[in-house]
Length: 83
Picture 1 (cartoon, rainbow, N blue to C red):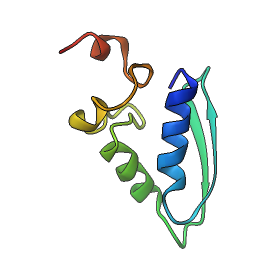
Picture 2: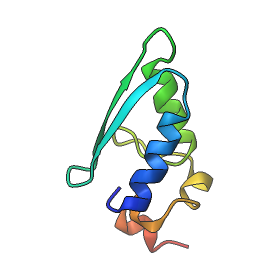
Picture 3: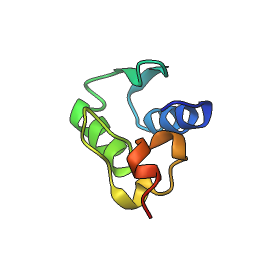
């Protein structure tokens, strides 16, 4: 995530889950801090949700088809150049 569009999409996807309290994205570090209610949603559920939408989580690339729908700012440079 290196642009506002990528951040908005990421935040929207996270906030769509029940039990999310807040999302804070640091574009410089390409990291996010997510506060959630563990009795409503698990870390595994959040991770799976983000991977399904194509985001990379802890070095694991998300769903390839979904990644193609993300803005180019959300992709690694080598991914952006592949057909």
